[in-house]
Image 1 (cartoon, rainbow, N blue to C red):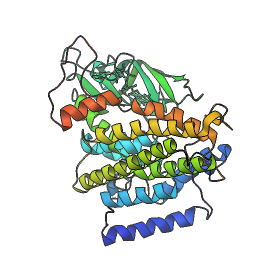
Image 2 (spheres, rainbow, N blue to C red):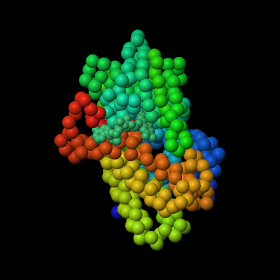
Image 3 (cartoon, rainbow, N blue to C red):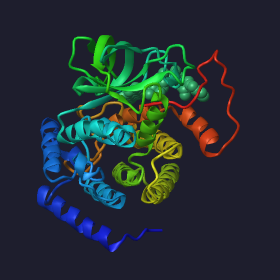
Image 4 (cartoon, helix red, strand yellow):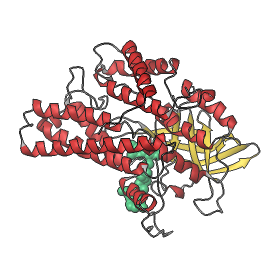
Length: 415
Ligand SMILES: Cc1cc2nc3c(=O)[nH]c(=O)nc-3n(C[C@H](O)[C@H](O)[C@H](O)COP(=O)(O)OP(=O)(O)OC[C@H]3O[C@@H](n4cnc5c(N)ncnc54)[C@H](O)[C@@H]3O)c2cc1C
């Protein structure tokens, strides 16, 4: 089944294709094909090209710096970019354009929208996510970070952990306890906090890939203006869940395009390694093909809901669970195809992207990087167990599991 788009949407598609043809070299093979040293500068330049052409956050209203386009035009742009193997966002944009921006559009005041949204698009403000704490992951409502009013400012004390891209951000959205006496889901607020201040310390955490992409963030008498609360004081739990819907469901309509291209690379690898005639490998490749097709259908379902004007809700847990579990298995398959080469990968694993290299082939370093990178996919934005709980309780309406105060087996969770 292939969806048909309106004439307007197809016209917009031609425009995007024209833009890509104008700005990408004729032999473009994707960001993964760029030499390691050139990738960072290229991404920075690409972002400024997109910003100048008003192609970042295209569905945001014009008065806040967006292009005021329809959801279908946003989807068409995402499809064309995914097919051309170029990102629609770079750096901290996943948190700014992908999460806090749309949340401010839903919950923010007019002043917040006018102040923060254009700064996200210009790149002046680079965001990170301050949800998880040492004792608050799946049980996110257990957060202990406190914010108390002192005149016109919130004063924040506590610690966040696993803060992805915290070292490149200058703003953090923070869940903080603002009413310690209230039941735990009720006394939380969603605060916007500048990071460039003495009360905030960012400490990197080294990962198994060798990179340090996430951090601990410590707040000691950190401050933010009183007005930087989104969606009312003590209503942060609801705002936090709106953001999680964007985090889990944001890329869902075009997700399958990237996974299709990755799977094509793995099939090609199987041919090159002589594994494509092995019936056990063929069986696993056929399984992977069917999973990518299911993702395509799930994407169409999200598209239908986006066109009806819906925000991503608990249903976004279905696609999050699906892609993250799939990716763990298919990247294991790639390593099995590589065989002993996976033990001594060629090149730098931490710098490798998940795409084919300059020769158009998936290298062993890329396959290993992809394998390692797929492991945390079933943890961040809420673990697979938590997604299953959400699907059971909030999508299928099954009875809730016991909410004993004694254990961490609580409510929905996080980023
Ligand atoms: C790569 C990466 C990037 C991240 N980036 C960020 C970020 O930028 N900002 C941020 O705030 N956080 C971030 N996180 C943190 C992430 O959201 C948490 O790791 C996640 O919510 C799980 O929490 P936890 O690690 O405390 O595990 P726990 O909650 O302690 O869970 C441990 C185990 O218990 C299971 N479990 C817990 N509760 C239940 C339940 N009710 N039912 C069944 N099983 C349950 C879990 O599934 C898991 O297997 C990131 C994590 C990773 C891996």
